[in-house]
Structure formats: C-alpha cells, structure tokens
Image (cartoon, rainbow, N blue to C red; front, side, top):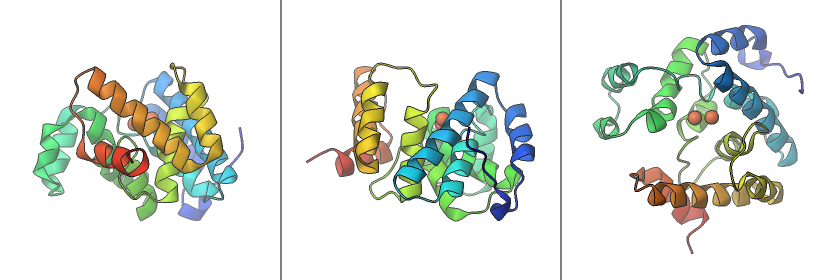
Length: 195
Ligand SMILES: [Fe+2]
Ligand SMILES: [Fe+2]
C-alpha cells in the first residue's frame, strides 16, 4: 500500500484511520482502504491530485452505517432539499454523509466533499476528483462482481470510459430490480453513456 500523508489538509492519517474504523464494520473498513488505494492509482494514472483522491476514497463511506434517523435529522438541520426524504441510505450516505464527514473528520475541502456527495450517483458534469472516486469505489481490489474485470479495463482507458461503464451497469441493475432511479444517476447515464 502506498504510504500517503494528509498533513496538507491538517489531518493525520493514523488518527483518521482510527475514527473511520470505529464507525464501520471490518468489511467496510477494508473496502474504504481499497478505495483509497484505487483512487490513488487512478490519480497517478490520469494526472489527478493524488492526496485529494486518497482522502476522498478513505472517507467516502464514513457515514454509511449511520441510522436513517441521523440523516433525516441533518436534512432538516442543514435545510437540504426535502425531496431527499424520498430516498434512503444508498443516496443519503453520500449526499448527506458529506456533512458528517465535514463535521466529524474535519475535512473542509469543497471538492472532496462534493466528490463524496456524488460518489453513488455521479452527475452530468463531474470534476476529475468526482470521477476518480465514482470509479475507484466500483473497481477497488476487494470488489468481486460479474463485470468488475471489464470495469477495471474501462478505467484503464480513461476516467470517462470508467464512468460510462459504471453508469450503464448501475442503471441496468436498478431497472432489472425495478428500483427507483435517482435523478443524478440518470443525468450521469445521459451525459456519459447515452447518445
Ligand atoms: Fe458508498
Ligand atoms: Fe464505497
């Protein structure tokens, strides 16, 4: 594992790891370590900000195991779009979870927080960092689902190829399961896949 420092953001990685580990299952902790590494590699490959990418990867699922009541409370407290109440943990842990990351882990970088907000859905115009996290979350070394090999191959070509592969597969899965599609997920599909 590449040793990386987050001192530039006023953060000590060891301290951060402690807080993150306490907030989640061992399985998820291994996942976020994998995403940190995947994001670092994508940043190295595509000339991104390596430290920002690693930090986004490490913290992106920090809020994932919070109870729904925490997210619902924050949606009210921070005056977020009330439409968010129609969704659930899959959307909340990113969109709302970024506020928890900011408050509890002390991450203030707006680009990192936005990447965390978008990590499950993407959106039409994503920053390079948001693409790195969206893709890194999907292809980290611990992932093992049908199609992950192709996803990794797509992510070797370009970040946009990686985003497109994932956006198509997410949408295919959601429609097959007759699940609701979050509007930003559709935006990502239309912008990166649809012609
Ligand atoms: Fe997530
Ligand atoms: Fe994740």
